[in-house]
Image: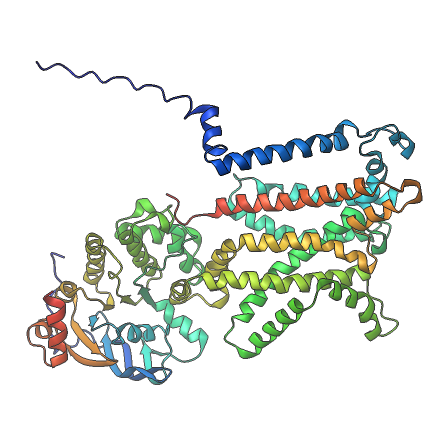
Length: 260
Length: 368
């Protein structure tokens, strides 16, 4: 995390291409209102960190983007394609959106290499040879090519999470979603995963990351979004967000997370 | 003063801890209760084994062609089995055509052998298995029933172990895929499919197999037009398959429920559709988890094939029963049933051992 990406001017858009557009998204679990009027526009190449107390709906919000969660009101468009109930359309969008989970969710019955080549072969219809080449390239990138023939159960948590990142990258996605990627890891493994994510950021990947790693947010994010009880309370550049939080809830959250 | 310390070589462990004596002490005589149980078991073995050995081997009759040969000995009369052996294997299949049965079995053994060799890569095994699944039933059907220049053999002439294997084989190969589909259907989000599958499963699980067989052979013809005849064996096969599919569905559903939600989500997030998600990610893991349950169902199915005797099909057990009522061979039912039990046991034990080795081989989880 030594080289931080170039500083980012919040007033000027990164690019004029919108990658994700969320308009007035509401979601209920039964009577429980989980997401309340989420509006978010993400530019191509933009890196966003979403934080907030647990149960604030941050994971749910990003899981709506690839339709792992249904929402009842509002609209979401990814790279100009609107999410609908059409299964084919959902699958088309999911191909372009990589996702990394808190608990890795690698496929335990397949080797690391097979984990990485499965979707390119079966979804992108890549020949096996090409898929394996791509997979090895990304496994080298996350620095574990020597583990390619092992099973996930034989790897450490940090290694598994890096495989999960490589698996997503093999689909050549336009957007990467990270759902608390380091929350299930030991401290020394958090570092290796964050380094992988930083190097991804340096390549200009569009990223939305739900995390409590404030150091990562400071060095990498263009924008930090704070959510509480299903609402976006505040969003700002990391410098402003950490030094001059506007709302009381943000201040309380930051005081709890930074000084313990 | 500094003397070098020379380590004393280790003494050998006492004889009472290692070696055969140590083993005996640890496993058989470690506590008063264990001593008592060991002695009791020894006593039971001493009174049970000699008579058993005398009956099955020492005093048994092995040679001869008639029951008179057995008069001299007090033990088992295995001549009874030898004389009826072909009947037990083929039923009433015409003598001249029995090579077709042998060929059918041989074909299966030869074509399926690579599946049981460890060095063959999984990719090839999968293709071979699918190939066998697609071609073998057709070849076996033609060989056994006839046509294409072969003499026609009515299914009513099939019997013995042949019939048992046909019913068990068809039942297993039909019940597993059908059960998987039913299990997926039962977990479906679509209410129509779900209701259909739940109704099907609960109906077939709610009736005894005997009833199913009886209905298929006695009641079904009442509902069908008089000129429409429907092979009796075929009806039994359909009945057995549907019945076992319902049980299989519940076994598979147990496996599906054990797969963490994260696996479904990861597969979905990669853009895999429903069938690919199930076929590539969920089912391979779920089926592996429920191998014991699947084999349990298979073993039960294998033994349940003997119930077809109530609709007048002559499977192995019914053939044995039939031979014991042969006036020329009255009084040898013990030998007959012991033989039948041994054959059933051999097949069931084989399945059980194979499932254990399969489980061990497919284990990738936590082995380092």
